[in-house]
Length: 144
Image 1 (cartoon, rainbow, N blue to C red):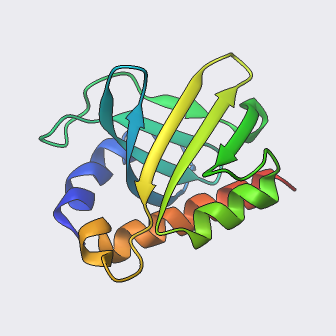
Image 2 (image 1 turned 90 degrees about the vertical axis):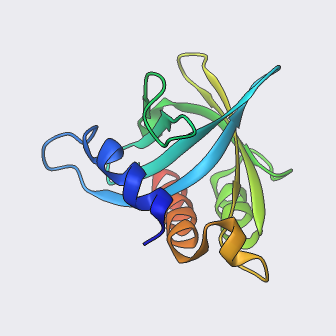
């Protein structure tokens, strides 16, 4: 495992509810109008978890937990709002920007590398690729 995953995983696992299973974990940049910050983006069998992290890979803000039914709109790198397009964009791109709006009105813009392709090592490698694939599967299941 990469050092990032080794250090981030315990923080994410501490957020899991009893019986909840971690399906995947990847690093993303959450951007807003004037700043960006590193987040752990975790998929479970129940939710999508967004945990802000500092440069030392320690939690640096309140986590966001999103159930499939709490997503009002989602798009990925120019893909439309449909779940099938999100899955294709997340699974096929070497880098993807995922935009989410929750039913509570929260907006998230998450940019991540897929961990695949010629620069895979610099994009997080195998663990990142597995986390991004788990994210694609989460959206696929959420769309059913």
